[in-house]
Every structure is written in structure tokens, then in C-alpha cells.
Image (cartoon, rainbow, N blue to C red):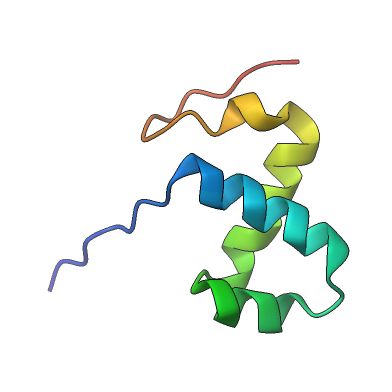
Length: 65
């Protein structure tokens, strides 16, 4: 059975990255946002590395520093 991938808006990814820095309980935040814990860590890492410009949309392109 094939699963469809969820596509999250760039604004949600940025908000999730910022909130994950502020909160101490990442598991609770992931449940609140409906995102897996691993994705929150990924969003935070990419936001720290590339900034807002990384979350452009559906593509896989990464902005280089």
C-alpha cells in the first residue's frame, strides 16, 4: 500500500524550527504540530544552517552558504 507524502508549508517549517529552539520537550511540540520528532530536528538543523531561504517549497534544492 502506497502512502502519500505530507507536504508542509514553508511558514510552518520555519515556525516549527523556531519553536523547537524555545521548547525543552520536543516530543510534546511534535504532537502539538502533528509532525514527527525527526522532522522537527531536521527543520531546526536546516534553519540553523541555511536560514529562511532553505524552505522554498516542494523542491529538494538547498541553498548553499
